[in-house]
Amino acid sequence: MRLSASAVAAASAAWVWVPDDAEVVEGNEYTITRLPDYFDWDLSVLAFTPTGPLGPAVDAVLERARTFGLPELDWEVGLSAPAGLAAELSVRGGKVKLTLDVLARDLSQGLPALPSPAADVTIRWATDFETLRDGSAVGVTGFGGALPPDERIEADAARAAASVPAGGGGMLVAYVDGTPVGSGGVSLVDGVARLSGGVVVPAARGQGVYRAVLDARLSYAVMHGATTALVKGNVATSGPILRKAGFTTFGQEPIYAVPLR
Image 1 (cartoon, rainbow, N blue to C red):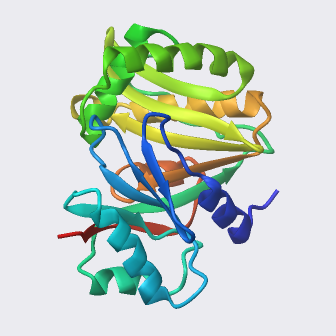
Image 2 (cartoon, helix red, strand yellow):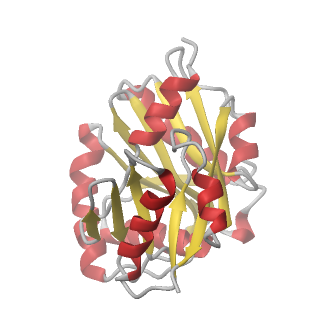
């Protein structure tokens, strides 16, 4: 099966994740979310579907975002974003803070053959408090922010303990000599395996840890009927590794930091 650009763009646009402890505000043409304090990203645009002139629609989002009292708004310009959105954000002082590669791979013919890691890597599902805390700590190292409260970790571990055997996915954590060194998430929606949060601590990079976590996520996805794997990878880090694993880049989605003050 050959993946089409339109199908990948649609799957990318449909991929919206919001933790249940986030604040969500919906307008007629937009959705904004404020994440909990332990995230490094405070305020983001989840959806933007203007029906009229683009400039006033952008201004309406920014006006609502200013009521949160935060210094900036993160706005991802997706593959299906309205033409001219990036220019409108730039005019309002927006600067690209991160660029994501949208990559996908056909899984209908089975798994890619990935090289074995140089290190002796053990992979565990984060279905208990300790493992999920380890994975969250690895994520903080790679993405910033802080560890969630213990009660949040306990609740997420309980959800994962039900979700993983049911085919819904969860977080995998990689260990080398008993030390957590990598993590990555996978969720399955309508035959698409969404791979998220892949990260390796700096001291363990270059040993194939990311590939080991990727292989485990893809194996799980195929086992549970996924026919496509989708990733939004950092162009400077995970993107090159994913292309070597047979993923194709279908475009880029820059994330703009737009000043609110």
